[in-house]
Image 1 (cartoon, rainbow, N blue to C red):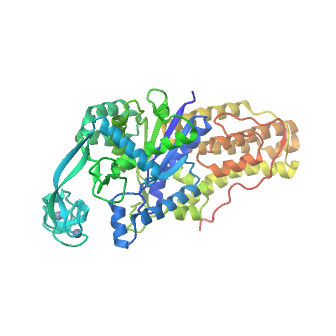
Image 2 (tube, rainbow, N blue to C red):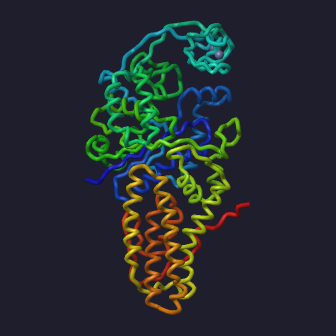
Length: 534
Ligand SMILES: [Zn+2]
Ligand SMILES: [Zn+2]
């Protein structure tokens, strides 16, 4: 049986544009998936847009449009962003599809049947005028700490967080009328039942995760796991498939994170493979979850708890690829500072490989990083144009100019052969570990190694003096180029794909490829054009 790999990339919230911070957190997933497919693993890479929740409904109300309009607009933009940056999702869907809703409802029924849901009734703030229960965000009142009038979940003035029932003089933020109190019922998920199982899971696996995931998870578990409400009073979201919950919807934390399973199930069905088999634990499934550090407990605690509640035979996350943050020109990125660079602008103005290469070479794997467009351009000019592109171009245009593109016979240098062979192992091991920045640094080393070889052996001299030696040098250089087309493909898919049109028999695979004895080059063109740094 082929090794199986699931890559679950975080589901962006469809309420705003994607920016470079998202890109740095999400792109490692695509690099992993491209590697995994080259390696011949049965790979499923999924994600989708998170369409529900109160930030979207509130914004829709303010703008006088429907929540579906807001979420739908951003979903379409995300799809376009990912397509332009050459993400290879097996499925990029969203939480507003019938398939997702129906499958979440099935999971919810299963969790209920397995005894992990119960009903609570509690007094809750109600607006007689609007005829609905109010969420904390929909309430305004006096802060129990500083006494100023603020929103119901956190004070805008003293930053204290509290429950809305601690406030006084409460009014509905929608109609500004005083609130009343009514008893309301909700479904609760017994997260507390998984405290021991998840503590053991984290203790056993945490060392293999990124350090931030290990740390954050321990902290989260140490606080103790409270049960969580599964339902809320909203009309935008997944309907609750149990009687008496007509006016409520499934809470976003519950249904969006289950998107990994609903999307994976859909891909399995489309491929004609069994989802239960694919996800079965102890049968060699590597399950990578790729996201930013603010999302860690969702992937190491909440999601695994839901998996255990659905089917204890399901493989829990094996790899947590959780990125640190991206700053802009040494400042924290934020909407208010106006220093966000959107993925849309990047994709519209710069070559795909430039954006991907820079994002991976300086990925916030171990610490926060700084993103700057001038640095991205310099990196691209230096390593992709001046290093990789130049190595390819020096070799190929010389062959075109002097030999009409006919490649002479020759033997690949033994040392180079063994170096390239070892690169598949070292870079491959880093990929599987989620050390993608380090894998990208190895690409840079290989580019420098190849150029150094070229400068030392001086093929332009050999061409005049020793035809046999020129043949060997050429065979060695083209061998390196053919293997760069594989080794670099996960990070820079555009340039490597162009190489496949120039060199013959360069199958996309994760293993040494050799070229025919002699052959004619395909049409040679420049791989990368320099960007003016001014
Ligand atoms: Zn306050
Ligand atoms: Zn009201």
